[in-house]
Length: 80
Image (cartoon, rainbow, N blue to C red):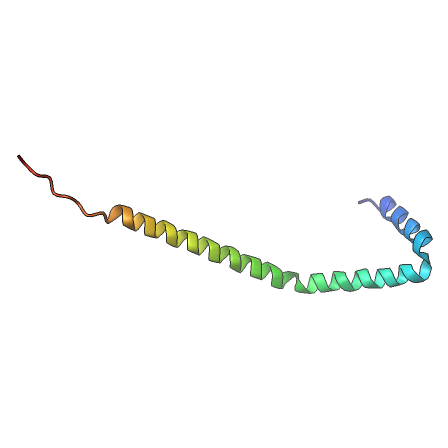
């Protein structure tokens, strides 16, 4: 978004809301932005932990499947 677009949006918001409501809206947006910024690292950490858990479970499933494949009992050949 360019600065010109941002200025147009702010001007229209000022006309529609008025200066008092625009100030309250800016305060609210600032608080929400701060909250999201503060909790971003925690959320990213949780997402990364979840991804690692899924990868671990997939690796375990692959290892178990490979173990079953390589540890099949060998049937003796009968010579007639």
